[in-house]
Amino acid sequence: MIIRKFNPNDLKRVFEIENSSFDQSYGMKMFQQLYEMGIGFLVAEHEGYVIGYVMFWVKYEFNGHIISIAVDEKYRRLGAGTQLLVKAISILSLLNLDTIFLEVNENNTGAIEFYKKFNFKQDRVVPKYYSNGDGAIVMYLPLAGKVSSE
Ligand SMILES: CC(C)(COP(=O)(O)OP(=O)(O)OC[C@H]1O[C@@H](n2cnc3c(N)ncnc32)[C@H](O)[C@@H]1OP(=O)(O)O)[C@@H](O)C(=O)NCCC(=O)NCCS
Image (tube, rainbow, N blue to C red):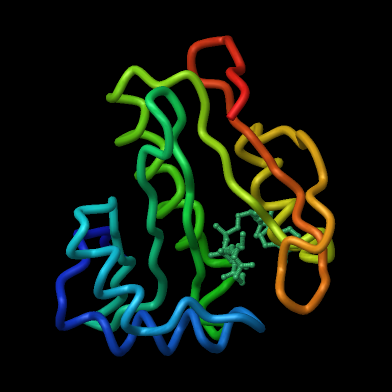
């Protein structure tokens, strides 16, 4: 498995993974726009086939943000999510940021466990964050031993 930069040829496949992984999708056009904006965008490739992706950026001056991460269901629990997240964290760590934030559906216990494994801590719950009424848990990973508020 390799982790490499996203390129526009991956768009359809990444959308397929995202669309089948979440109830609510960003949509293919949004992916294209985020890519054109220059966000961090990596894919995991196994034998020439894209099996996962991660998107991240710097949200405010000192905060990194994981926008979205997903692995094709058939390839989960094989370490692809770990490789994607570790690479995203290591790139964001080069930018002298205080903290990496992300939002996760409060009912998504698998992803919450996944993030805890990387020392992400639970911050606050944002009620009705998602359009289906589910709340989000904000999780954060301090990078410089200090947590700044968003
Ligand atoms: C979350 C996600 C990206 C993890 O990807 P993955 O490739 O399966 O993750 P890994 O194989 O690297 O898992 C690493 C560790 O995280 C934990 N973990 C991952 N998925 C888990 C789950 N469903 N339940 C409990 N722990 C889990 C485990 O400790 C796992 O190690 P193990 O397999 O040796 O027990 C994947 O489950 C996914 O795409 N989910 C749907 C989309 C999603 O929820 N994204 C996050 C939204 S914020």
